[in-house]
Length: 217
Image 1 (cartoon, rainbow, N blue to C red):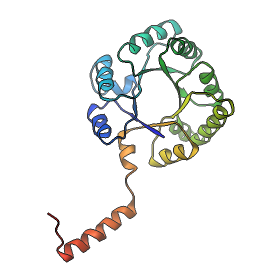
Image 2: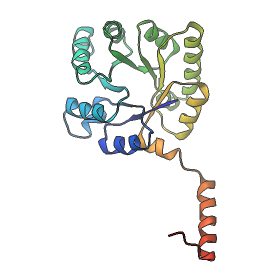
Image 3: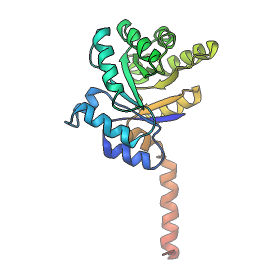
Image 4: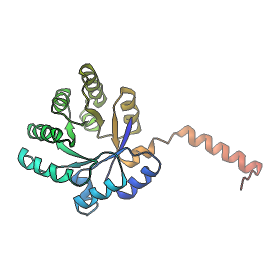
């Protein structure tokens, strides 16, 4: 499973990228606004760091303006994936941009029917939001399983990009189901290394080292 990092924090992206933990980046205007910098400038800087897909989101709601914004974003770098919402206008934009050879990430997906439409429209990625479904007591991972089954049934090339990830368990479940990509905040990716028994074992090990006076350097 590929790891995308869901942030516009340049330092966090560099840190994870240096460890080989970044296969791509997802951004949105809200994330970039927190940096207080220009959206095009930040997006270009991220594209210079990461060779994999970098999702950059349109802000318009009508198809005509959405398409114009998408074409402008696509010119930033060859690894841009234009992010559009899962609306009828977004699907229209997806179809046109995909036909033009631009990667498209269709976002805000909450049903298998929506995911099927996105695949038919040629989406490179579909982004189902598992955390937001969990928030309203619907099993977000059940949706990932449904999409995986549908895409496998018909050989769709659209990649399942699990989004709105809140926990390390979300990452594990996405991998078990067979998602192509999971995008998560830096803290969640780093948190995957944590386990209480690892900490307990290390405490015991270090106590033994101190007691024995062991030194390597």
